[in-house]
Image (cartoon, helix red, strand yellow):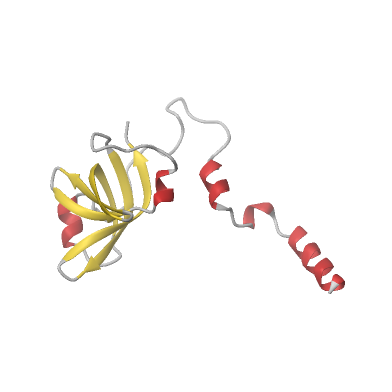
Length: 135
C-alpha cells in the first residue's frame, strides 16, 4: 500500500498546476491577475452569441440555447428559482445560491445573467451559469 501511495504522490507532482481542478472557494477567489487596460481589463467588443438577448426571444428558443439577458430579478418563487424581467417580458430563472458569491441583489439591481434555456412543456426557464451585477 505504501508503494502505491508513493506512486500516486509522484504522479500528482508531475501534473502542471494549471491542469488541476479548482475548488469552489478557489474559483470564487480566482480571476485574472496581471496588467489591465485603463478601462479595467477584459474584452471590450461584440459578442459571438446566438443573438438571444431578450426574455421574449428566450421564451421562444429551443432547449439548451445560449442566452445573455440584462434586467432585474424581481422575486424569489422557490428554492433557487426567481422571476427575471427585462423590457420584453418575464421568465423563470434558476440560480444556484453559490452563483451570487455573497453579493446582495434586490429588484432594483440591474444584473446580466448568462446561461441556457431549459425547455419545459408550457414554458421555458433559464438555467443560469453566471450572474453579473451591471453598474
